Length: 392
Image (cartoon, rainbow, N blue to C red; front, side, top):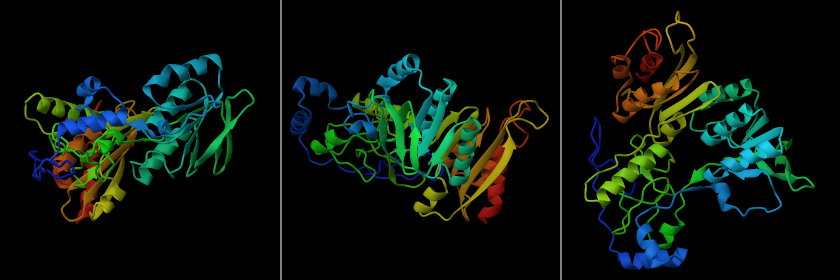
């Protein structure tokens, strides 16, 4: 397959087979020596780690920590108890969350549930940049309905520190925000310095290059997880998408191949799900902007519906958006924002994207129905039917 990690050997309608690149001529011993020099590891330690890719870290972790600045936290596994301790011992009243992605939204919800006044600052004009603006606005409305103050299209310039060394404000492009606690979720990027220093190729997305077996072009070195680039089955491009679902599958493929059992990783389509309060959010494939960037002539349809039959109690409102290729009707992506029991519908649409189904085909699928679970026409089917009227 190509440097993009293409879906060689994958199945399904429209699947394309790509030839694997030949391994570059490299001496594993010399590679290990370069790795040792880069990280000052012992040969014994390295022999246990040379086949394991280093995990990603958040961008804020690359910055030097200001020892005088307290209650500004980067998001990592080790900090959960620290934030909890601050909440218990200092009783902060106002929190600012910087970043409106998946982790930022989860932190907003957690802090609201702990009784704090929460402001979310996002440099982009919408939260959840993986959604189209119209669907992202629905997420912003959900945040405001929870009592969260949203500052969208606003960048962070710095932090104010009180006499006791604790943060007391966040400086932004639009003025200062009072804060007793600041959490920064600025996203992630592949950490590839170890690979670069060892002469292992890094691709256009910033991730380590592998083939479908998760082998790098350097003989004897394998990589998997958030540090590698993946092949996107819709855009046909190399991408860096940090999702645990991808990392787990890639790790399994790498392990099987290392143990002598052939296995291949077929690519990604970026299916993801989260929630904020009672509002569920999901997406798969390409949004309208991504479809245009990938060279598709795309159209989209959006519908509003309910999670249950209209006469059945406690149904939730939801919106479904489907992006399709003009002419062929091929489903390129989809997004869902709605109340409880809405978002997992994305899985059916993810299968459609993966297998290159058309909107007409999806609208005639034999999906399960009973009033407690869905209207007789599921909202996903109505959305594809609506989009079908626009692709011709």
